[in-house]
Length: 90
Image (cartoon, rainbow, N blue to C red):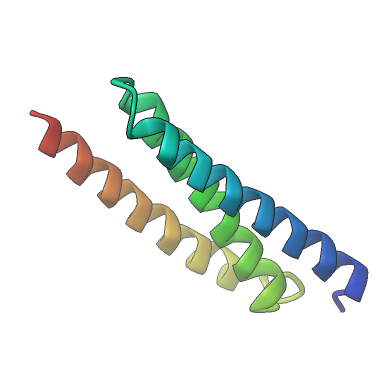
């Protein structure tokens, strides 16, 4: 069972990651460094998705098959987004 303290910590991390993503996006608009910024945003997105899946969707205590399946789906989607972005740069 996930405790209220664990959920509060997860929520605080989600808020911090959202603010960090916003700051990176604002910084990106005025600089020419594109790939590291995109990678940082995708990593933060993966962290946020993982926290939502494990803690708020309550998949942490279930069998690992379901966790791997859902987190794998997120990884595939983020991989396709990064591939589409890299193709658009050419």
